[in-house]
Amino acid sequence: MKPSIFIFAASALCLSVFGHANPRAAAASDTAAEADTALPRTLRDTGLYAPGPAGVLRDGIVAFSPQYPLWSDGADKRRWLYLPGGSSIDASQPDAWEFPPGTKLWKEFSHEGRAVETRYIERQRDGSWRFATYVWNKAGDDAGIAPDRGIPALPVPAAPGGRYAVPSRADCLACHGSTSVPVLGASALQLSPDRDPLAPGGRPRHAGEADLRDLVARGWVRGLPAALLDQPPSILAASPVERAALGYLHANCGHCHNNSDLRVPLRLTLTQRAADPAIAREEALRSAVNAASRYRPTGSDSHTLVVAPGSPKHSVLAMRMQSRDSRVQMPPLGTSLPDPEGLALIERWIANDLSH
Image (cartoon, rainbow, N blue to C red; front, side):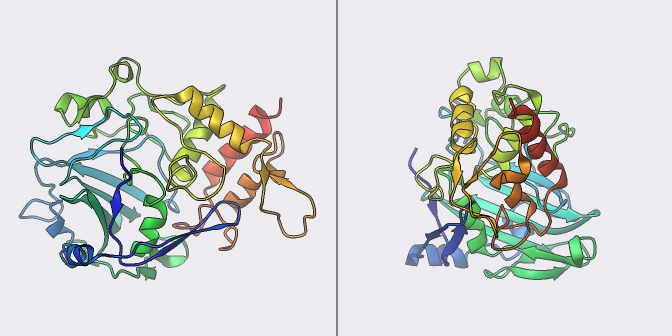
């Protein structure tokens, strides 16, 4: 699969997990600039909702939820997918789905039942992807497009500290632009019917949410190897805790730390794959466990390890997950609080499963 083309009118600086920067400029062509001006100005105009009362989804919109969700300061999230009539996703490469032009995806963020923003991704006719964020009004009946620079401190009483950071379009690229497929939550592994019960922030599928088998039955996913329907994708692991830990790292870190040509410049691979789970597990463990880190905590004069078996406090991975110093924290974007459940899982995995 050829890397996707991204439309952005700004450059992004994506920090690598262990202290190095990965500058990626995205100069916009005239065609891209024209496409940007055509972005829908309201969420309703994206086609998510049917005409009439607010909140009624348009026909042909399918809800879904990934089994390993991204931590977002405890926000509740809902996700939807739309494919143009008669089209389908080519899943012959199970870990690099080819979405047809006209594909649209939405992700709504809310706190205490109030929708705050909805993010939008659309694949255009030329194969490029464009991104937008829509901020909900106080009445909760529509959302308008956010400025390209984002909104650093939107007043939201239920959010941590009463403030909510709406990402800039460059922030979107920092996460979605470091992998060959910019769609992060809809994949064979994420939509597997074999959901991980220990996944931090995970939950059983809600009624009406589609999984991998549902999308195949609808004809929305074609070409998926039959073996992945007979035996749904799952992360290969030595224990249930390791499975959940590798899944958490896949969802929260793997979009930047992978083996694609667009990854951050660091030999750390945290993606898991439906097609070859044994190799994916081996790559993750080899690149992290007992691997030297370039990052040194303040006051340390010794070499540090990404993951030090048996010792979370000496593992750079856990240190940086826990920090919210902007120069240190990981992930570098999108959160103001560490994930307590995710951090506890990773520390448990390092302390117990890797101590032997």
